[in-house]
Length: 132
Image (cartoon, rainbow, N blue to C red):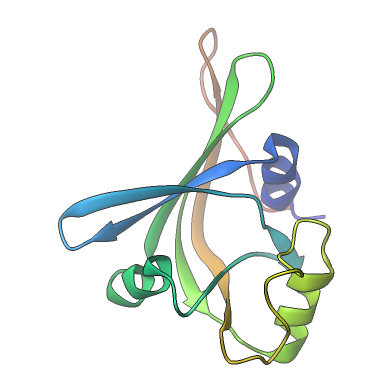
């Protein structure tokens, strides 16, 4: 499994930051899936998240593990709405299968690229997390 996907599943809820013009926007997410070895996130095209990612595809993700350790991921997203990707996301236990259907015209999936991911704690240097 992709290590970044694995780590984000461990934190369960992570926070996705996007930009709206010059204002950062942060919201909780829990859907993360792997497809063809890469991490994917999703949203709906009726949401502000979608509009913000159309304007600026750079994101940051942060989530807290139990015990005072956290993960921070910087990446860019590339829209990838192949039915196979949407089905993989919806079939993942974290996927929003109660909200969307593959190919419904509202569900949008994004591949994370140019990823830098680190695990932090208060007592040691950051540990880089590679995808594999």
